[in-house]
Amino acid sequence: MYKTFRVAIALFILMQLPGIIGSGDAAAAPQWYNGIVAQRGRSRVMAEFLQAYAVNPGAFDNATLASYQAAIGVFDDALLVRLDPQVQFFYFQACSSLFISVARQPELAAKLSNMLQSSCGTAADYKRLTPKGQAGRMLVIAYMLEGIARQPEAYTTMLELAQLYLAPLDKLGPLAPEAKVARMEALSMLFESMARQPEATDMLKEVTLTYLGAADNTTLESPDVRAARILTIATLCEDIARQPEAASDLIAAALQFCGPARPADQYLPAPRHAYRQAVALLLNAVARNPGAVDAITGAFDELTGAPFTGAFKTAAGQADAYYVFSALIDAVAENPEVKAQLETLFTTYTGLEIQPAFGL
Image (cartoon, helix red, strand yellow):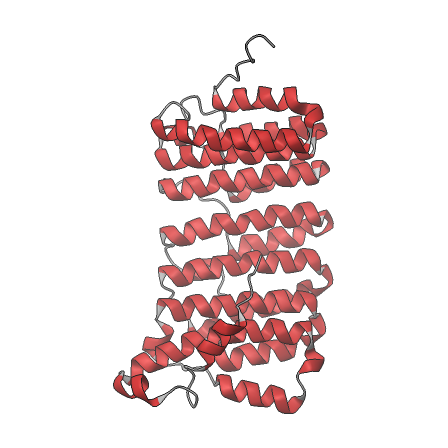
């Protein structure tokens, strides 16, 4: 999931750090701004450094490690720095890298944590999160869940790190809309992790409840959040295709953390667009495992309220129909033996008929 930074970008950022940055622009800029720019770069480089060290710790002897950490510098805890949205976002990006790295090398957890804390701080330094910071924090949970699924033995270590670097959900206050969208995106990793490691389901759900929280079914969410929810349900259908035996657990988790279907979604542009994208993912899931078609479509119908009868009747819907049709073509190419079944599903969820070729 995590995309490592290109070496060129990392070198560019290093040039901005204290002691390395050129004197021209730095001298002209206010000191507080220099601190913000430096901390942004510091966190981004640390995200790269943590993963590089976990991949090959032998490449960094003690002298090299100390030298590189000195070049990166120590955390600037000035208030204006800590409140900068990008500083917060890159801090959480570095936290994501920490969980990825610990899943790879659990025995390095203490050293990796010390490196992160020295250069980027901890959750105690970011008590007032901006909307961008809230969103970044939500996405860290996805990497934590993935790490637990890959390395269940490191569960306790992951929890200890989470307590140090991530505030529980109930300490965040009201969530911004973009944070709620990011929360839905993070839930996709919960479902994927449950399908990958069913034995870790209880651990995964405990972490999710603490750091992402249960669904708030009393609040009328924004259209963007509702659209993100539909796409998350579509990824759940792909996970059911991978692990049909986990379908009931996955549906139960979706109801707990995403909430039930919202009938009004089919009348709102953003959720309708998401639904059309979700149908494409549904076809792909069935092509992958046609034996699980009942479980896949049952989950999709229950959790989205599908089919959306008017979703493809608008101009935007007609345009998206070609996207879904291309997904059908790919699905048939992947599994031509279930072509008729896939075409039936296409018609069921789009309301569009595929006309037979004349004279053939």
